[in-house]
Length: 165
Image 1 (tube, rainbow, N blue to C red):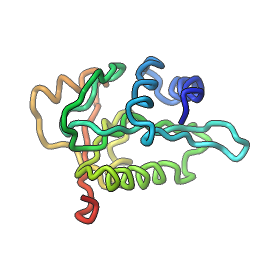
Image 2 (image 1 turned 90 degrees about the vertical axis):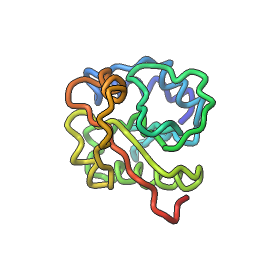
Image 3 (image 1 turned 180 degrees about the vertical axis):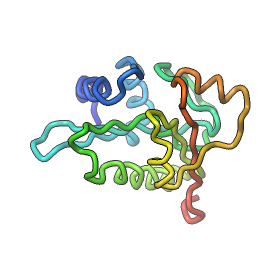
Image 4 (image 1 turned 30 degrees about the vertical axis):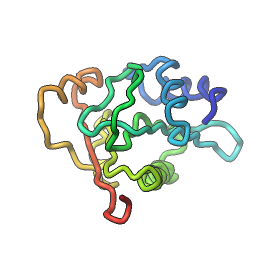
């Protein structure tokens, strides 16, 4: 992903994540913070058909929706999948699995023992298929983090294989 891809990211997000608006500045900050974790999916005709954005972060503390991360220079212990969006025509083509495989590679490269995400749109079952499980900590602070994602949002995590870290 490059800065010039952000208008396409915004257009895809608008179609895929109805009700979950995030400003372009949020995507730009994630890209600037961890460009290696930001990928575009491109169709055979060369047009953008999806994206994935992930970055190192803190397990159990999902960033609020549509908020900048700021200057967080503390120790991180997970790879947070901030967003994945695939246009409907691409679904079933294995791009989601490819994003998770890439996520596992980045976890290994960065020596991060966990991956995490917030499941929305009733997608918990989808993420369970890849090894993510609902976070078991019901701390009030976690509920506060999730409030911005709306009703039904579920924080999920996955441990890296022992050979990863």
